[in-house]
Length: 167
Image (tube, rainbow, N blue to C red; front, side):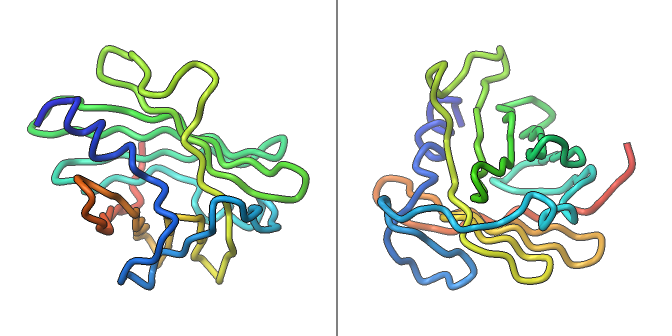
């Protein structure tokens, strides 16, 4: 699969309609992000390794500082880097957002310089965080992400399964 195919597959992150998957919640485009504190998400901190999108994935989240939690994501397929992400969970005026920038293996960005892919926070329930279009759920040393995607007009939920590992 080419980088362009992955780009088209993944750039439809924000789905603002309903799908059959109850584990992913959505806000309308004009709805504000939910109130929350970055400290509510401290259970996500760590190095996570697993699978998703038919390949191998690594995700690393640093502890919160200055109302944000910075992370990075790497997607490998057949031993080759396909793309990576720079991620920031940020608390702004009492509201939470997950902001992403995607990069090809040569570090060329998918988003324009000033643009981010943004997921608005909805709520947390224990160790589950719901953002519009993506859900993070921790169960012990396992982290499960459910991501809403649209590819060629077909809506789906992609599941990422990680185990907490040491560096």
